[in-house]
Image (cartoon, rainbow, N blue to C red):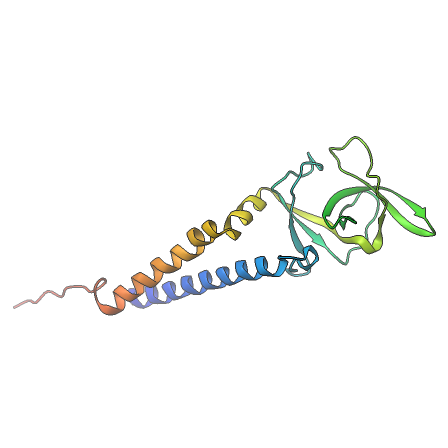
Length: 180
């Protein structure tokens, strides 16, 4: 009975590890090369904060979740694509009309002045909804080769090694005592 439960449990662990490895590979490969192709999870896109321009609201290394289809309003924190191709996450402090179009005026909470660039609705990728403090550091480590090997590869290797030893009878066999 215990052996059967352990076998099911070990199989479940292997499946969870395989799914985790697959998800890491999928998320990293999807966002490579095009910052707008960050994968969406249940309608939210995770982004890692790279600067401290929004301190104390969040810090470099935090992960934020943005909702792409949420309409932005004053005081919302938005992520938008800068003309130079980078993503910027700042707070909307006001709205204006420029060349007959509604635009947003943004500012980092830790910055002294508003951004010079007026943000159009078309350049907004989403409105920030949640913060996961420090998760960007973990994601960066796991996405790297050393982190992937340590957190995904080594546990799978150890699990497979134990499975092989158990199936070949090297470990896990109980000695039966003979009574006369």
